[in-house]
Image (cartoon, rainbow, N blue to C red; front, side, top):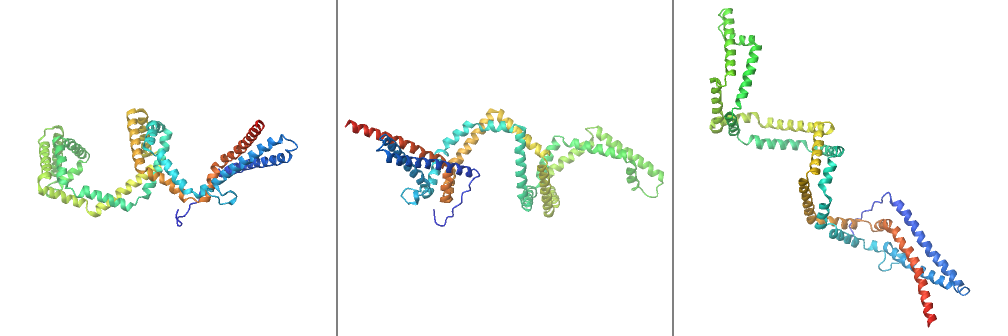
Length: 428
């Protein structure tokens, strides 16, 4: 680690206080056994000439002390300098923290982030079936939809409105203003006319016209009377109005009732000519372009983009906020349907599982070194003293059993050695 690299303090968890109490308790127990061995040794050593059998006790206590001290040294050397003495190969964790982090990163990369391990685990888990079964439950789909709503709302609030308006305007300009309208409208219109789709529109216009005339005969009469000379008598106006009204109403009825009426044929021919001109007549195409520019000049297009985004954003926000809205219900329903399909369709599940395994394998193969490097770099940033304390809190309690076992095993070994030595001496 370079001198300029700052070390990051390690946050101690809430359970560390309990671990510290347990560690201190185990340290006291191991130390108490060492003190007990020392007291027993001193007493046995002092009285062994008077009571020869105490030689065996002294040998066991002596071995117990040696084992306890040796294991105390070994355990202490992991975390600090024993008795503050800078003996080589002690205070191992603090002195070799970076090497330990690098080794841990290499171990994880080699044994946990290999493509074979990751793919094998993912294929054995059955992600699609588990995810599908979980999503198929209504309450789980509701939870996911709630989280998606919160995330979507956050994204909408983060978006820059002006940038979105400019994007909509650019898209509209590219797809509405730049292409010529005439040929496209002509091709669509020609297909509609050839398939007879205009007949429904003509029938609708005729129905509306007949209904309006039947409901407003006076308005139609005034429209006719206003065009007659003013010197005609009033009864002539009424006769003309009534005659014209009946003729127009009858004409509309005749057109409505006769699919082969000449008026319909003439209208079909006219529409076909218009659609053909929109595709091939430069003058008609120019008129369509002029109409397009008049409708979608820059200020209007910018206003259209702004109003479109404002309306869409407001609708989305309202729908996301209301758990009973059609949008939220649609999200929940979609999630439930997807879950049911994943859980019930084995072929789809296998495709999803294969896709997940392939994707994960590709990511792991490409970035496993960078992923493992996170461990190495994180350990390097830790403060050495705090790292030692943290590790000792995690494993120190178990390591104290080494001291306890060392005391017991040392005592048994010391006794065994003493017995064997005396036996050999007696045989000699």
